[in-house]
Length: 453
Image (cartoon, rainbow, N blue to C red; front, top):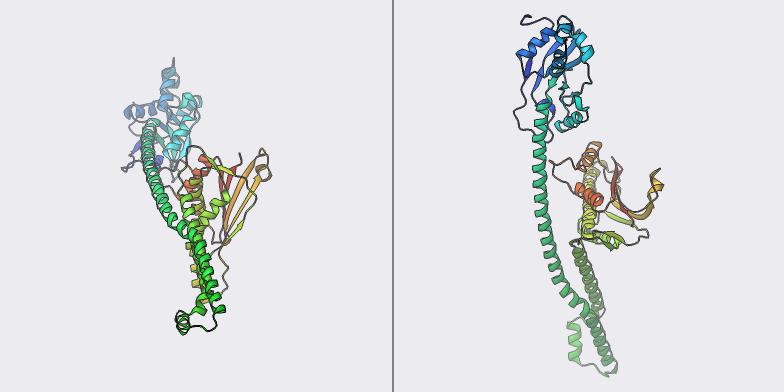
């Protein structure tokens, strides 16, 4: 019987898992692990004694002169022991001799590996190694053993959480879609009610303008054919300031016409923005969509931001107009927010530094491009390109990475941002691409690519 504690064997240490509940981002360091290290020069019966005394130990970490050299599992040790004459062959041999026969590929993972990622690594192993424990490397450069059974249980728990989160998000999305559909119908009804009186004003303006001109002509004819104007008429003309009224009347009618036209465009743009998409996409004028969104955000520009449009010749684009309007609104709103914040900061600094600040602007470029011209070795295909660029402060590398991460469908726990929603609309619903480039101090550019079918 070997001694209870050998100088070549460190007593097994069990580290319990974290008390907090597992989440989608949990790592393997939160799971229960075993720290059982032995020198490779110890005998096989010595390690067999410890494995027999501690039945939950999945194996042992092997050291050679206190340096990590490998791992042998309980299953591999038992496999060689039950072979014919196995006990007799390795009874007096060192563990190094047995390990030279029982050596297998070892999966070593850092302790910061997410549980789901670790599960994927284990499934990529050969079938005969699926039950082998995992060697976990800690931050202190020590090694522990993780039972693959404990990993499987944790992974199933997290996948259950992910399924629940996905279900709750789909339910919330259904409620939100129904809410937006009802809101769209409500806004469309209100816009229709506004368009009716605007139509009355617009339709009668022509007659009012014509009638006023006819009355002014009649008054002028009376004055020309009257030998001596009546004193009462002269008093009335002076009282109503006829000399001022005559030229100002046409200006007032022109102003009313301009206001009615602007209100009509605004309400029409609101109707288009709240358009409820049908099952199949329809061909739309992309430039009209952009103009409608720019008109809706005009009040936020406050005369401080210039919108520069460079429109190319585009054919009708097959798309879901309501969803595409949402994407354009999200991107333009983000650009406006960034420019307004930067303009306020520069104006504040100008009071102290007296530096000349540049005019905030947003450039919108549209064109039909060939993907083969910009992507080497790509099949030639025609795409609609919509570039929205601002000369704002730009986006830091850290925040750019956060935006890219939000595009991934694996980020189920985070609240879906407007850019993530836009990415899904362009890629999943339209089969397009959403790219962005940003540089601090230069600005940010978003590019929407839609396949030209």
